[in-house]
Image 1 (cartoon, rainbow, N blue to C red):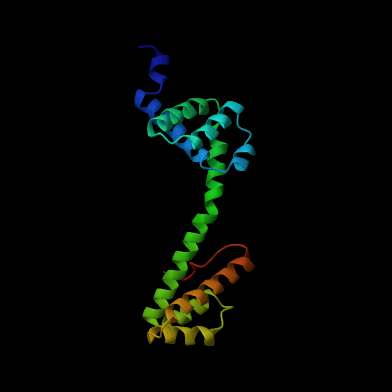
Image 2 (cartoon, rainbow, N blue to C red):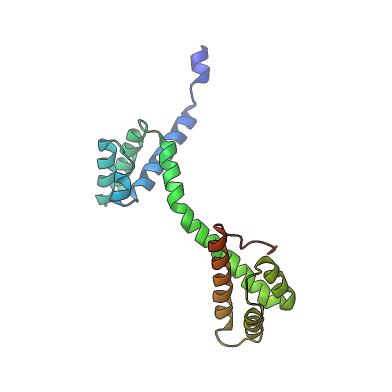
Length: 174
């Protein structure tokens, strides 16, 4: 066997790469037209992505996805993937912040005063009296109290993150 043959990617690897390019193309097709226009894609690829959106037939979409994958071979996928990742980051950050707020609320309700002290250590700008009152109401099972506590915790974390320029809602949670 020659050295060139040894270094050629396997059929499985080529297939995996082709499927990755198709998936990237499919994700690009989900973007609004103005976002695609800013990417500076080749005209033929841009048109293929636009056509993909208009196709309803399963088989026709599959063929178009393969065609997009073929066209994507001539484009550097890294900047496109980075663009998609950057567009998803705000949604991921919002989901992370929501989970953090839920965990704090659940901990405050379950543990009471020790959790309030931990929260106040993590978020010194919080109004201690209002937080303690909200936690007490939620622990007593008052109607709507857990939701109000969640909103209060969320507002505190959001305000602190905005002031600091970066979220730190996970501090001292674990």
